[in-house]
Length: 127
Image (cartoon, rainbow, N blue to C red):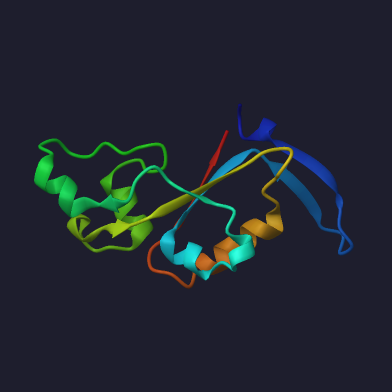
């Protein structure tokens, strides 16, 4: 599905702003997750803890990425680490759909938290 077809426009809110529903997967780092109020933590832990020192000791080939990250450089930028072997941290994921959409206001709230953390600990992938 293209990004254009994954949007559904709704009416405007009381301030005249148009809201959108997006089919998306939101990934956040542990620094952002820890800043969320308990009731707002509707995320699941992503499939593994990233600790690249362990990977570097056991792997011969360069890490090729996964569903969230393109490559080692992308992962390094996400956590804000200078070197790849210092990367360590959890990633949390939440899937949004028509029934439970990612709204523009919610996305902006997460972006505000990104500014208060190391790196860029937020990724949105559209389905």
